Amino acid sequence: AGGVGALLKGSTVVLDPKLPTPPVGQWCKFRIEARGQTLALFINDAKVWKFDELPTGAGSVGLQGEGKLVEFQNIRVQRLAQSEAATR
Image (cartoon, rainbow, N blue to C red):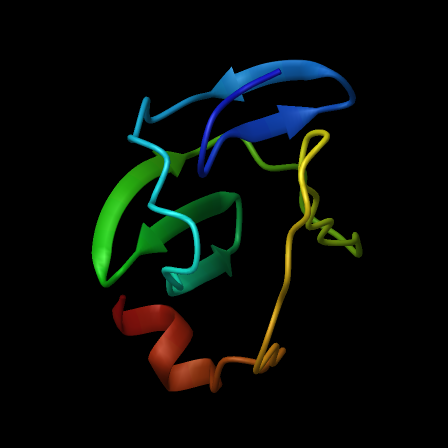
């Protein structure tokens, strides 16, 4: 059901960057940006995909691991300043 950094809608894989699974114990830095109808994922500061059909409005972000132990650290949600959202 998708690899590292896959975008899922329910159980359907919308985008799968086909990245190699990192070695056990290695942390990856994920950044998810939602700007209007555009959703982008950066892994270790490299953009791995951009999706331009995001429904506007409120929603949620889900983080999951498929059948493996997954740990998360330093999770933050930040509202973009109006000027920053318009310039990126």
